Length: 192
Ligand code: GRF
View 1: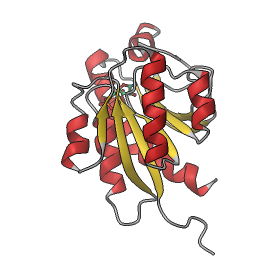
View 2 (view 1 turned 90 degrees about the horizontal axis):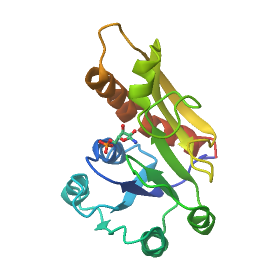
View 3 (view 1 turned 45 degrees about the vertical axis):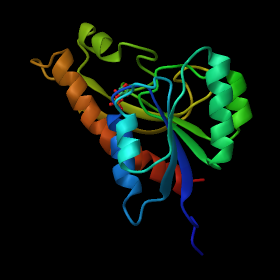
View 4 (view 1 turned 135 degrees about the horizontal axis):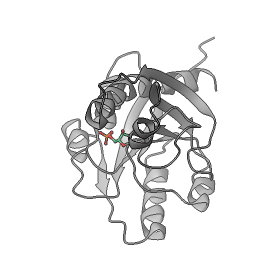
């Protein structure tokens, strides 16, 4: 029997550039992908990433972050309307409330630019360089009420070389982010 019947409806939350959204759109357009992106929401109506959604004719909304409650209530209505099964945070720079996580009730995934549990929160690359770490990487994890602490679904490691700096490290990690987010979604869905 097919373990995974039909495609899951995915929503992606972004805040800016949207390169991870772009990689998820590319994956979703593959015939064998397990997902269909039905909704993109940005807390910043000017986010560059919204252009990728428009180009691919995906419903997209810029919802001003007048307050967390306002943003979350508007988003919850849309998540319901578009029958979203999984919410993927991709460069979404706001912290969702426990109330939102409870109310949505379906899985929420996030991509984080470090080898969690190392460097939760912001400025991960700065901290890795400052500490002279030998490795960095990216993690996809489930979102829970505790910041960057939910179950890790997939991680990939890269070496930090002696001549790496903030710019080169960011670039290297971003490259693997684009690679592992689609893979993590596949892994998550086939292990449901
Ligand atoms: C990524 O590095 C993501 O991990 C971090 O913010 C960056 C967003 O990039 N949280 P983009 O908007 O997906 O291009």
